[in-house]
Each structure stands twice: as C-alpha cells, then as structure tokens.
Length: 87
Image (cartoon, rainbow, N blue to C red; front, side, top):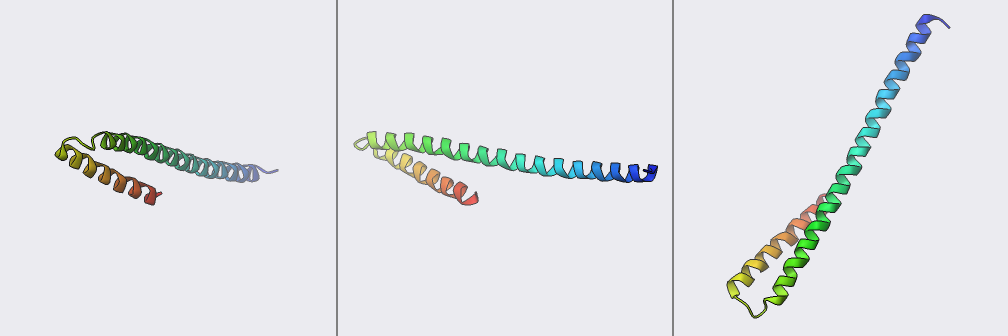
C-alpha cells in the first residue's frame, strides 16, 4: 500500500467515525428527551389526580375554592392534552 492510500483510508475511517458518533448522539438525545417528556406527563397526571381527589372531598365546601380548583384542573387537562399532542 502506498502512503496516499493509507491517508485516504484514514480520512474515510475518520469521517465514518464522526458520522456514526453524530447519529448515535442524536438518537440518544431523542430517546432521553422522549423519556423526560413521558415522565413529565406522568407527574402531571399524578398531580391532576391529587387535585381531583381534593375536589371530590370538597363537594360541600367553599364555592369559590371549588371553582378555583375546577378551573385549575381544566387548565391542567388542556396542558396535558397539548403535551401529548406534541409527542
């Protein structure tokens, strides 16, 4: 083999390594971000369940507090729907 052939093969190997590394990094990031989004949605659903439980317990309570919690829950439901639609 000539020196020029070795340089060519080295350059090709180097570029292929960069390409493989970039693709691997991209998919690792995408997987990590998707996992983060799923966790965020799960936590939001748990929080929503807690507020729904509060609403159930306050059926005979203060009307203003109940209205405020109801509006909060409606806003969270819309937020969760937007999050899931963005996936």
